[in-house]
Length: 277
Image (cartoon, rainbow, N blue to C red; front, side, top):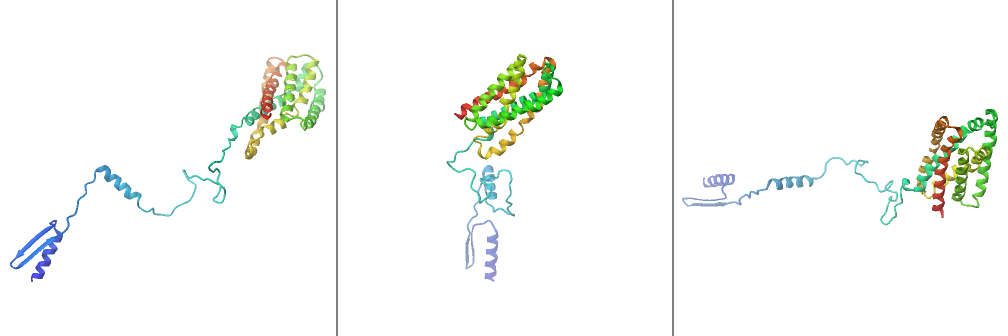
């Protein structure tokens, strides 16, 4: 009977909030005591931080996905490849920071404006000035002007084996600027001779400007070449401008368009010559 009574007291004591109890009945004396539960007060902000910390310490669940996403950085083409950049390595400039290339792109564009414009209006010029009829002018352009162009290309290649390409380009640019200026001045036969001399002087310009513009580009050469090959679009702009000037003045004055374009080439050739020294 006493054993059941003791068990009952212990059970009720354990379930209660009482931490200490003493019972004395007749010759039965019982003392019970248990540790009190401490209640921790957490401030609202600390409680929030504590909850965040508990969340962050939880192990991630699910299957990790390794794929290119925003914020992922790749230091090499593949895990087996060497890194793009290492500590102490000198980082080279980008394509558009190469002044020789940028200026060369403009010079090549200007050259195309001049060359295509002159070819387009050669017949108009010689016919309007009474030098020959349209049929003879077409023959002279094909075998005379373009023949001189071919001779100028071969001669320029031979000369550049002995003189730096930048210097040869500079001399040829001076020749085209002088020749087109004489045409603009409308000096009769002198202007006609100057027109044919333009074909000689301009012959080496495209390949020479192209090659000089690619100097020092390294692995950017292919990309730079693709931009340079788009420069012939200038040939679609030059004749329009030259035709507009001719319609509002005369054919001689319309050669101001090639003259300005060759001036750009002259400035580029001078810059390239200075850089090459």
